[in-house]
Image (cartoon, rainbow, N blue to C red; front, side, top):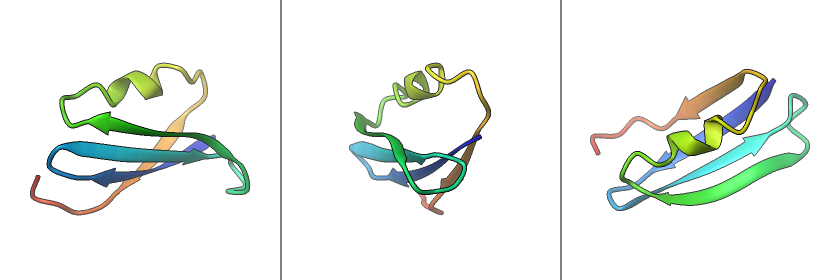
Length: 57
């Protein structure tokens, strides 16, 4: 299992992904807010659980 935190902004988003124990950063990337962030999830064969901040963007 991979856990991801998603920080959304108007022009970009940042995702940080950690292992199941929350000890090791697996991936951290900044993406433009155009939908390309979904590309990062395709890299993983195991389930990814995402926590996202509440926002109006």
